[in-house]
Image: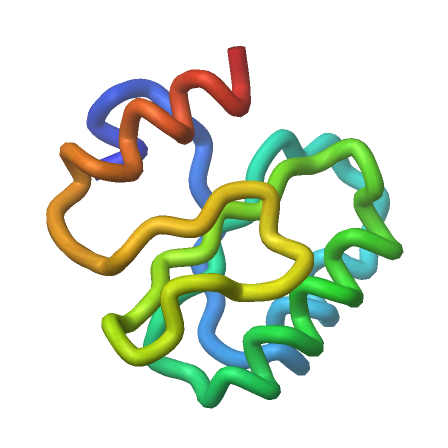
Length: 93
């Protein structure tokens, strides 16, 4: 979806893999944290992302039982992209 509207996307599953991919210096505007991992795992990656990339924004796609992920700049309940795509556009503008 994001590639179709012109964004460059790197997708990984798991904190360890994300940290390995993101260990090389690169310019990143936005991270999207998915909803499937346990809340503690999601919290840990947000802390790591904010420390490593302090200028980047974090958008958390949240399941109904966890509507706020601490540390994320944007929190949205998981549903269609019509909810979060405008946030992506604003965050990288």
